[in-house]
Image (cartoon, rainbow, N blue to C red; front, side, top):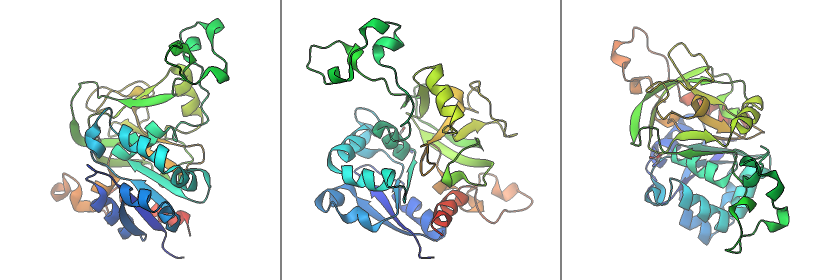
Length: 293
Ligand SMILES: NC(=O)CC[C@H](N)C(=O)O
């Protein structure tokens, strides 16, 4: 098997690209860190790669909302690249933390979830606009806009939070989580609270196995009720920490698997009686490589 080639996307403010590329290399891939500006200059560059990874950090300083500017830049200038990785069926996409925020803003993690328009969310069914009314002329009522099935917003306590969390894997088609039940990984974010549009959207996502990764206590139970802080560090709906697309090839998670690839990265590693061979996060990168075998 030839090693799959990973494009680790960099933008101004990205700060986890080196360790993310290292994790992929350790798992047997070939990884290159490529700046978004280089892709704009050479739009065919992405064709060399089979995996797109958007790593963590503070792209464009988290201005407007975390991940918003990079997602907008990608949507307007790198549409072919999104199509190549997301829609072709042959490739994988991983967004870690700021990368998940980008994927959520792009809408690629929640495709296929039925979206009523604003008016029907308000219970104002009669005024739902026809699809042809969707463009905004500056005068229209907000009722003509789609409401996304889910988004990421500020942590409940309104601050950046940095801690180790227990995670449980739900029944899911996610390629990256194959054969993983539980992980212990660090999280570090301010805008990582997953919020579904309503109970119906949450149930559609859950039933399709899209809510792939959840915060849990050390016993690994997957709760649908929101767990208290700090078990659920941001207060997100149904303790969601990671979401995948319907195919399982596109996955975003808020915690950082690349920060726990070696056993000595575990905060209590000196007190453990036996050391595992690797940190919990490495298997995710290995699963990605093995998918191409
Ligand atoms: N570690 C990260 O990628 C952080 C993501 C983003 N800057 C936030 O604070 O929410």
